[in-house]
Structure formats: structure tokens, C-alpha cells
Length: 468
Image 1 (tube, rainbow, N blue to C red):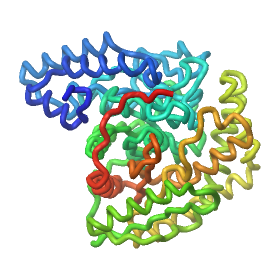
Image 2 (cartoon, helix red, strand yellow):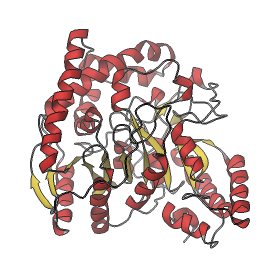
Image 3 (cartoon, one colour):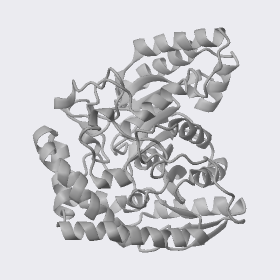
């Protein structure tokens, strides 16, 4: 098996034990990148020279007998919307193409500290605000399983890269599904961490601050092909940075829950259409867990429809509403059209309604936490529909359909909870898939359940890009 086909856990072990070198690992992944990336445009900035230099340094460190960090020599990618020293944080925006960061964001620093070698930067939509990965600066990313449908967004380049073997770990971030949706669309694993688990800020933006919706809901997380790699990446990415006041220094493993663990599954999400293939995936995930000793029941958590509406009231008002003037000046035509439709369907609210929405969010969170005392895991579709066709969101009607499909993805960010997207079943060329939600700081419960599902479904292997 070629090195690019391995997951990070196995690749790190081979490098640590001298059965492979960092140079060989980087060479293998770069060769894979050059073979498959032209067809999908997942990686939009290749860091080949720097990666080879870092690999040589990594191999020299091992030869000298230095203690090796957990991802020593493992090739990874980062997303274009996080600061990486010496590179632009362009976020897919043409006027930001020379907006060069002078220091690393904490998540990038943590990957480097763990010994990972960053081989490239992955694509995102302009301003990272669509589930379609396309922008005027870097162009469109295609889904390697089916180029007619979106690879997801905003971390669509990350999901497509991991799916095709361009590194075993791809960094992403998530405010409304931007890790979990690309994981679903590309048929890989994606972990949206809970509030404050991973330090999260860009030094380039620290002086201006962020709207409260982004503060409460935006998090970092990995895309991987195996659940064990998601666990490994989480441990690496969660290393602390005290400049982020939100960062929460808590153990990766929480107290054991009462056994058997009870799981509430939600095959059909209230408030709109649920595709039969996604309904079936949720029920199949429940069967896998039930066979492993979990107690599984179809059970609705509190007020799902109202939670979706609260996400829109908060985020449309402060995140999208605040970004709209900038998008009109600096964005690309499709991004502008998509955001115009979004703001027409879910209009920003007045101050009193906005404050009331934040207050109601707190009340809803209490109700969910009470529910999760009895049902520690909740499983829903990642999207309630199949991945939409490319550029489906540039008309108002198309955007309405996309937003309807997104409703299950909005609950975890609204409540600040972790969510693990895992493939379950298939539909034509695509994988269907679910997300596993748990309480804050209980990513471990999501990962444990994800490993059970993965054992039944089979480990994801890299794929070649499908023909149109």
C-alpha cells in the first residue's frame, strides 16, 4: 500500500519506528496531490518546497534520537481562512489575495507543534459562507464522488482532499455545518468540536473582534478517513492558547455515562423534507449501535424547529448581516446572489428580537441538557437531503431548498455542542451519512459511537475523482 493511502495513525507509527521517513510520506502525498488535485481543485496553494524542507528537518530530528510528537512527519492541509505565518488568509476573496499573516492561528500552531507537515491550503467559498466551495480567486472545488453536486462548504476543499488521499487530516471549521457537511458530501469523517474545545482565533482579526454569533458557534475541527484519526487530530488541535478566553482546559475523556448508553435517533427532522436515503442512514446507524449494546429509540429532542429559527435570527442578524456590505464590495457574483437569497428568506431582526433570541437560546440549551441527561447521544442526518447540485443556491428558490436541507446541521452550532459526521450507507455514487451529537466536552462519546458505526460500515478508503 502506498503511504498516501494510510491514515495518520498508521503513517505516524511507521515514521516513528523508522519503517518510513517523513520525506517518503511527503513525497507520496505530493505525488497523489499532483495526480488528483487538477480534477477537483481541492488544494489551491501547494506548499511543496516548504513541505520537503520540513520533512528533511523531521527526519534529521528522528535520526538524532529526539522525542517525536504524535504527528511527526505526517502531511496535512489547512483551510484558506485561518492564519498561517507567511501566507495570505485570503478566504477566497480577490482583494485579500495579499493579506499575509505574520503568525499562525492556534490551530495551525498546534498542528505544527504536533509534528505535522502542512503540504497545502484547501479551498473555501468567498468569506466561507456557503455550502458550495467556489470563489473568484481560486475557482470551484468539485466533489470527487460526483462533480455535479457540491463537495460541501465551507470546508469543501478539506473534505475533497481527504477523500482523495491528499493527506490523512484536513483542517476545517464550522459555524453552520462547514465541517460536517463536506464530510457528508465527500463520504469521510468530520468532527465539529464543541464550544471552546479548540482555541480559535485569527491574529489578523484579533483587533476587530467577532460578532457574538461567531463567538458562540464557530469552532475548528478535522476531516479524516478514520474515526481514530479524528480522535488523534482532536487531541492535537485542542492544545491550549491562553489568548483565547474561551478555551476550555478539560480532559479528553469524560466520566463514564450510565450503561447502557441511551441514544435518541431523529430519522425525519421536523420542519421540512427528509430524503428517504438519509432517513434510512439514521435508522441504520441506530441498528449498528443497538447491536453493540446501546439502547436506541426514535425520540425528538426539544424544539428542533425553533432551534433552527434561532440560529437564523442570531447568525443572519450579526454574522451575515454584518458581512453583507463587505460581500457586496468584495465578494464574487455567485456568493453575493446566494447571500442575497439567504437574507431575503431569513431577514435580519431588530435589536429587541435579537436579544430575545439570545435569551431563548440559553433556555433551549437548558432543555437540551436536561434531555441529554437521559439521552447522552443524539443522531440526526447531517443534511436532511442529498448533496445539492452545484450553484443550486444562487436563486431564491434554490437557496430555500438548500437552507431547508441544512436545518439538522444548525443545531450543534446553535447550542455549542460537538457533532461527528460519519458515512452510513450509500446512494448511487454518494455516501449517505449521519451526525452524532453529545454534550459539550463529550466528543469522546461521539467518537466512541462513531467507531462502532465505522466497524460495521467499513473504514473509508481514498477514492479517485469520478468522471462527469
